[in-house]
Structures are given as C-alpha cells and as structure tokens.
Amino acid sequence: MFSMSDPGIKQLKMRIRRKVWDTLERLDIASFPRPVHGRIPNFKGADKAANLLIMLKEWQSATVVKSNPDSPQYHLRLHALREGKLLIMATPRLLNGFLLLDPKTIPSSKYTQAATISGAFKYGKIVELSQIPRVDLIVTGCVAVDKRGVRLGKGGGFAELEYGILRELGVIDDNTLILTTIHDLQLIDEDIPLEKHDLTIDYYATPTRLVKVESQFKHRPRGILWELLTPQLRELRVIRELAEITRRGKQ
Image (cartoon, rainbow, N blue to C red; front, side):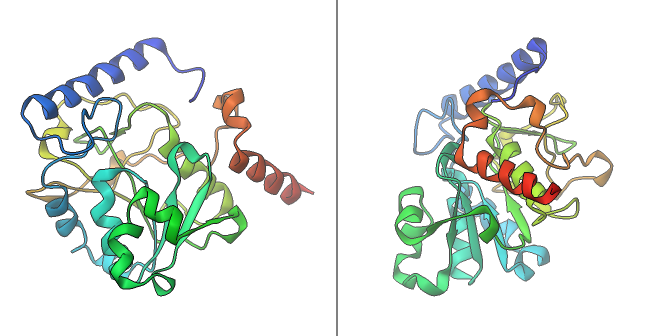
C-alpha cells in the first residue's frame, strides 16, 4: 500500500507474519476462514478475548466504535450493536469507504448477521466522510503484537490509512484508544519494526488476559502521510473525497 518502505523492514515484517500464521495453523488454533495466511487471523477463543475487552470502562462508556471488518473482531462488533453503540465499520480495502450501523434501525434478531461483512452492507449504510461522527474507540485487527504494543497487520496498510483518514477529519485524536483481540500466540517477544505510518495499540485482550500497554511506547500518525500513498490508493473514492475536504478547508 505505502511506498518508500525499507525492503529489509518489509522482509522482517513478512517473516513475523508467516511465523504467526504457520503457528496458528500448525497448532490448530486458527479458525474459519482458513487458511489464515494473508489474513487477519481468526482464532479459537476470539469470543473469550472480546468478553474480556468489553469489561473496560472505556468500552462501556463509548457510544461510537470504529471497527475493522475482519472475522476475529466479529464478537466486538456484535457486542457494540447489542449494547446500543453506533458502529463505524471500514469496508474491505476501503473500496466502499465506511459503513455506519445504527442498532436502533436494525432488528435485534439481525445483529448477529449485521456484525458480519456481508450483513453490514445489508443493514448498514455507506456514509460520506462528512457524516462520520466523533469516534470514542477504535477496534483494529492484528497479525501480531509485540510487548510495546506495536501492531503488525497483514501488510496492506489499510488500518493505518483508516486511522489517518479519521485523524484528518478530526473525529479522533491522540487520546482515542486503540484496542484489539488476539490469541496469546500472536503476542511476540521480538520487537516489530515501527515505521512512521504504523500504529501502536493501548489494550489487547487474549482468551486468557486483558493487558494495558505502557504509554511510553505510544505512536500515532497525525493524519495521512500523503507522500507514502501509491497512485492506486490516491484513486480510492474516500481518498479523493478526503483530498477535496482538505482542499476546501485550506481555502
């Protein structure tokens, strides 16, 4: 997704991803969809991890949650809907921008479907960037997390792009918490390289524990790093929409 990345860093990140994917598959911890290679990996116990994370007072007080669309965070999206929270969901690869799901407009019997990717398109609505409300919490998916809270995604860079868009819009800031659910085996001992577009998380939950990451490692881009965007990404509707909003704001 991003250009100008050091080839050695890219290779190291991919080695870490492959090790995690291989481990989850080899130990039969991976869950549908499989194989998990190339994905934010779903894992057995993702529901237990979500149940721990929603005990946070910050989760309980949140009214608007932004989430990734991947399978392991399905349980958090379902909790959000059941708890009456507005859910902002990124569409896969941001091809359709963002979806807004309002549980007040969705039959409660359909929440389990609405929390899926296909159901979100059915029961949510694609919104313009100007329609995105202030976000209280961000849920992100990870392939791996190190003990400093540095996250590693599947390599497309879309979590960082989504974050950058929301920062540019002013609906999140440095204090907006970023949360994730992972299996214990996705927490790695070695340091994940931290590039300038990368994100760290504030809390992660596994099936066995909830952990707050030490704040001294916190890293947040302040918006879109336009110089790193590939020509293909610049053609995304949401990026063109954001560029127009930015241009109007400077006039």
